[in-house]
Length: 348
Ligand code: 1HN
Image 1 (spheres, rainbow, N blue to C red):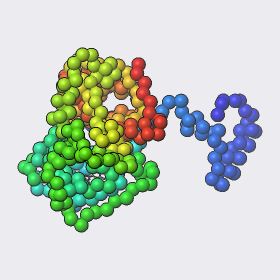
Image 2: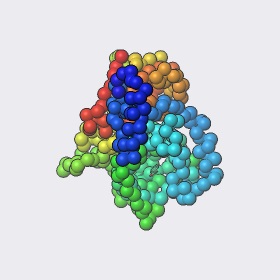
Image 3: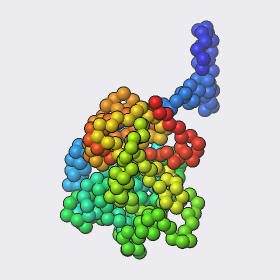
Image 4: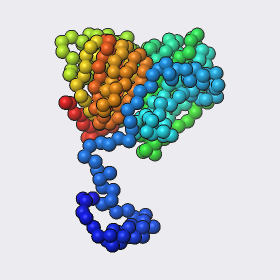
C-alpha cells in the first residue's frame, strides 16, 4: 500500500471493515502486498555455521543414549536458527548429521523425499540403495533418489558420521510425502559394489539406456577421490572471480542435476584467494572438505575448517576468503528454481 495520509475516522472505518470481513476469512491484499511481492528475496532463513567439533560431541553422546535400531536414524538435525522447530536448514532443504556405531545397522525404508549423504568421518560404513552397497569414504557424495530402498550399516571399528541432505521441507510444502518400511532390515545385495559407477559413471552408458521421466542419476556414488582429481586438474589459469574452480555434479545420462530437487557442487579455492561478492536465489549448504577460510555472508564473517557446515540463504551476499587450499562441497535447491524459471544470480 502506498503511504497516503488518512483521517482518523477513515482509519477507524477501515479497521472495522477489516475485522468484519475477517470473519468471512477475507483479507485485503493492499495491506499485505508489499510483504508478498518483495523487490528482492527476503528469506526468513539466516546464515549460520556449525563447527564439526561442536556437533560431534553431542552426536557421540547420542550414541550412548539411543541405539540406531531404536532411533531408526540417529541424526541431529541442523536447524536454521530462524526456522526452529521446522526441521529445515533453508526453506526447502533439510540437513542433519547421522552416526552409525560399529556393528549397528539402520533398517531399510524408502520415501518420496530425495536424499544425499556426504561422509565426514569413518571409513567402513556402507549405505545400500536398491540392492547396491556403497562403502563410504570421506567426502564421497552418495545419492538416495526418491522412492529407492536404503539401509545403512557399519561393519568397521570406528563410528561413522555423515551429513544427510534432503528435500524434506519442499516435499512437506507440496504435501507429497509417502514412505514405507521394508520387511527386511538389510537389503540383500543384487549387484556387486561399484556396479553403478562402472556402468554409468565412466563417460559411458549401457548401450540401450534411456532415462525415463523425471529421473535421478543412475550413479550411486561420486567418489571424492575422483572429484578431488578433477578439482586439482582444472586448477590452472585464473579462477572464476566469484566461484574459484567450481564444478557441478551431474546425472551423466541427462546432463541435469543428480536428483530433480537437489543440485550438488564441488569447488576449489586456492590459498589466499578471495571471491568477489556473489548472490543466487538457491539457498545453499556448504561443507568444508579440505582447507580453511572465512565466509562473509551478508556482512558477517564465519570462519570454517574441515567438516564445518555453513548455510547461505537465498540472495545473501557471499564472499569466501581461503586461508589454505580449500575444497568445498555444497548442495542447494537450484534445479527447482531452474525448472520453474526462477533462478537468478548476481555477480558484483
Ligand atoms: C532418512 O531416511 C535418513 O535414510 C536420514 O538415513 C535422515 C531425515 C528426514 C527424513 C528421512 C536415512 C532423514 C531421513
